[in-house]
Image 1 (cartoon, rainbow, N blue to C red):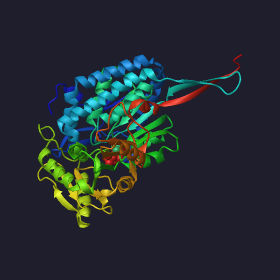
Image 2: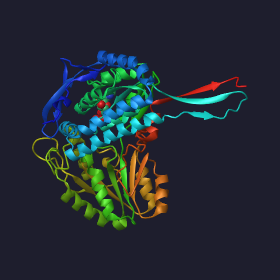
Image 3: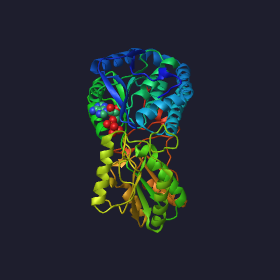
Image 4: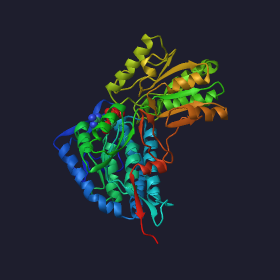
Length: 483
Ligand code: ADP
């Protein structure tokens, strides 16, 4: 890995404005090679306590700075990400595996969240409300919650942190980030840039170590007033349970099982193009990747033929740092085993592999882009999140059947459908039990939009003006004896 600014590759934690090492370490594997790329400290309860105390001490001053001053520091941070876009992308590709072009998009997306919330910092408006009693006035104030913890996953190692930390910091909160142990270097690079941007000590902290130990120190602490988590539904549920003793505010962005419906009046070519882009982004490892293709009988054959052809001709598997590869590795062998299990289960129950279906021999955790046909609802792949490059296709005959299939999931994050009918666009959107619906598009993520899910996909929204509310308390002041 060759960086223009090698100081961005930090193998240390960042607590109270200082870099922290430990004799105990966690090694980090490059998933394209299967080799060690570096290590980070394995810190535990004691250091988490230190981070919490630092963030608590830093909170009063940080929250009382003018919004404009906080905004300026966030803008410095944003500018630093833009300046170091290539280095950050390079670190990400190395630890996470995604192609360099996708890594660059992620750095830009992370930067855009920071820029957005730097702007929003100045627009945290309160309210005045007409009173129902004589001689009194109601004023609504919005105040930062306090110390916030962010526990983030490996699939978007930079933007998931930006999406949580930027609104928290803009609101006046202080933050402790625990990144995934699989991809900590994007987080430590972000800390290096936060340090350069001018955040005071204790305002932004990054800690790495055993997830359970750090997680439970964060959830048990009464001083941590908010927890924001992105990751699996099982861990989200556990963190929610553990946060109940201290009644923390929580935001959870969990699993998804996105349906992608192609109606009979759809522009099939547009649907095919978006299907490939959505399903195979980050090799299928995003919570909003299309996970089930639900295609109308009359366009099924046409869709399948074009989709399989596009998958075979447009996708090229290999290390993300080699130009033209657009399918990187999966994150580890567990991920490979999970999709092999889903494919085997589907084939045992009668599915047909139209293309792909196997690991790619050699170094790293690569898997062939795969399309499964003749899929039926009793197959695991139509119930479980896949998180890999496997596209199951199922057919339907009527709109109500398609909607029922789409809603037949415990998840409710993203859903997509393709149609030329405006009435149907509204009707089906209103019927889908999903937090985000793409109509004739499968690209939803934007700093300006509220990202989040229903049902077992989570609680709360990230991005947009709604993302700011997650880090604000409402305080109501009642003024009496107004003569
Ligand atoms: P994924 O399936 O995407 O790896 P996880 O839910 O396992 O999702 O991980 C997301 C984040 O949650 C990571 O930072 C991971 O270290 C952390 N994590 C995993 N288990 C726990 C736990 N028991 N307590 C706190 N954090 C955890």
